[in-house]
Image 1 (cartoon, rainbow, N blue to C red):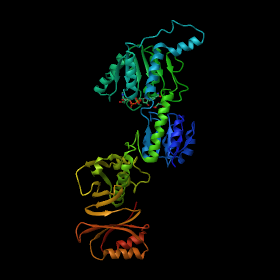
Image 2 (cartoon, protein in one colour):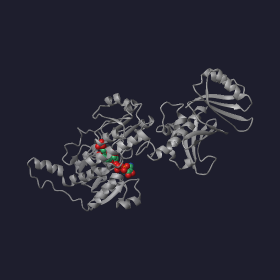
Image 3 (cartoon, rainbow, N blue to C red):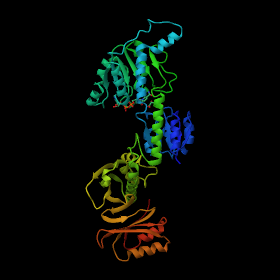
Image 4 (cartoon, helix red, strand yellow):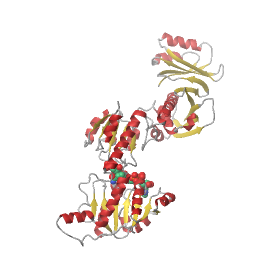
Length: 525
Ligand SMILES: NC(=O)c1ccc[n+]([C@@H]2O[C@H](COP(=O)([O-])OP(=O)(O)OC[C@H]3O[C@@H](n4cnc5c(N)ncnc54)[C@H](O)[C@@H]3O)[C@@H](O)[C@H]2O)c1
Ligand SMILES: O=C(O)[C@H](O)COP(=O)(O)O
């Protein structure tokens, strides 16, 4: 039974779902990194929000971990590169808290426009400072949205409902989409110059880090109000402080900070800021959504291999997962056979999908072929890490789909280019699920791979099979299956035979001494 650790505060719905699906679950929140490192080795899945930082050290301490589930959007708290290298799927819930976060941004905008937190503090302190808290209307004002994705688009919709004019800067926003949203797509400088309110809704990337800095504040309309419910690193806080103190920025509302929990921040104590402790996603509805979604997604993956909303591997739906399984096995066998037969470095890999296979989700199958290929040389590689590992080794990867008929209703063809020339292997499925190797180089054959195999290239001469049987029999090695192929009578031939135990080196040497043998190898699958 797979086992999941919930390390952050998630709705209890997540626990219910895991248990109902037959997954063992422990809830241990507030753990220190070392505590997590000490126990993570016992889990297949880890569910987190933003409080737990899933570092490379934690990942290294988790040899059995298969999936990290982020009950929320940002995966900046997960070392995705380290997870991918370790073959761990990282998934999030990209839509579950978008409305809630957009609503928080709008709430922050009103908090700034009407100074509600400051007026609240003053009134409760017994002051009645009616004239101090003169506000501004939002109607007719321009809202500048930086990052118009899921949350930005919802903010735009709500702002338009408030009769604001909305301009958006987002390099990936098409003009058509902007038109459909009712926003004006603009360049950043234009937005900075025109907006009365600016709200940030981008992820934190190398391009967006410090996007609001001293130079950007200088380009803004004096008296602009800033809202950040995205990520702390988008604003240079020292520059914002200077702009607030100079009055260039009238007020700022921040839900997120470069260092969280933010307990000691240079902006705290300023009169014209409003802060919340990363509450963007904190509503009952959003937390139910993300908990339910992540528990279902992680269960689907751990139980059925379905991949939804992964940030480091292609998606595989619950319906297609069972259809892909035999192809994944076949592709891994083809890759593994190639990996064990190669004698020089791999430069490129092409996977061709013929017939029925051409209609499938090809990327997981290609990843499986790469896994098989790399596994003989690398310890911990799987379909999550194999494409990245292959790229790191400068292996060019290509896929071709051909729905044209071949001798087989479905066929995978794997071409591995090496420094000494190409190796081509082909395989099909028998009875829809059973992998068979049908071509090895130029030699057609029909071979089923078992755990311990003997591969021989030989000259097609009488007496060879009897001699081989004698050598194996004398050593007490039982032959389980026997598959032969040749290009023409008397020409090059190939033999793949399954034996019931590993072949010792001395026996392999004896096989190699048979006069018809050109090459012999012991293979393991
Ligand atoms: N405060 C919270 O509790 C809370 C809750 C949910 C999400 N978030 C954060 O909000 C942010 C947005 O989430 P989302 O779901 O809308 O993401 P999204 O991926 O749907 O949208 C992000 C948008 O940013 C745009 N973008 C990327 N680089 C850009 C750049 N250099 N300049 C301008 N735009 C750029 C993208 O094209 C995309 O449209 C994320 O950082 C997420 O982590 C915070
Ligand atoms: O990226 C997110 O989803 C938000 O930052 C919410 O984070 P939280 O779930 O830790 O509140």
